[in-house]
Length: 414
Image (cartoon, rainbow, N blue to C red):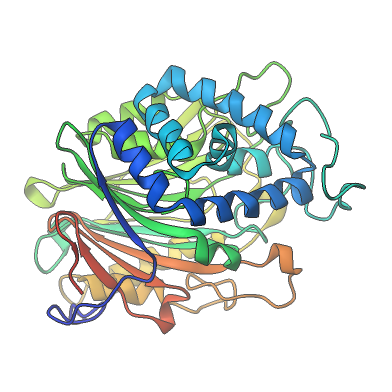
């Protein structure tokens, strides 16, 4: 199939499109190092989301901190090592610790307050009164609406030219987020190395670890999202993601995903390098339930709607959007290419460049008809070769940019 040229040639090193931060040690040590190294961008990211919490969820800064403290307590009960790291991130960056947890819970706070983007802003834009005691039933803005959406794909090594298991995704979000991202590489006291693209102040998004485990993600929306009366606070999904990336195997990762209490619906496309082409598994994780799917013809894809028969209402049904065709199209494009021979990273990259349905395509572009606060595009695109333990990152939209490659062990290679 397509020549494996999804980015600059090896031997022509170029910096990645976001800063690379490498830290090591136990959680408190690597967290403090990360916080200090990214202090300015973490502070900028927190201010960005404080404005969004105010304008879109009606939450004052004091209410945000209260919510952040609640999510911190839930995270400590489930994943104390990650709390050690996040507490240290706050200390290293010199920011309020509860605001770091609110940042990690941005999905739960933005899409769990009962407020819509069309609502008028609070009367006092500097310190609005909270609209209630905390996040309530999910607001009617779906993950594939103006809020953005993602397309993920995986290919088993049995269907690739070099036998390597491949993962990838287009990450669609507000374009203002472009300048508040980092590549984070951590090596803990156990020797586990994690490399992940993440928003500054968080510990994970799409990434891989030295055990050969990788994850890509999609937002989902269900009628169980948010903190309705009687519903206990759960772990922010970005904390859950970090816990998954610290797992040593696919089975351990599924335990983390299934056992962690949560208030938001997300999709995890998981891969594990290993014999016979490795393994892929997709988990649709909603509050109180999980659904899963396996690769067909060596390919597994997902977008922003539920594909398993979970007993919840998918909010995509209320809103529509490109999620209804993106995953199916990505799968069909890959299977059609595989009919002509083994697949490569370049084939996966070509799928992430697809413009069918533009601007709401797999390669998403800005729709100027959206209000500025509601605009979204593919901000970054990620490719992961799990057997080679490397990650490629392209600025978005990826149709205009090359992938820059990083080795898990050594950093930037080209």
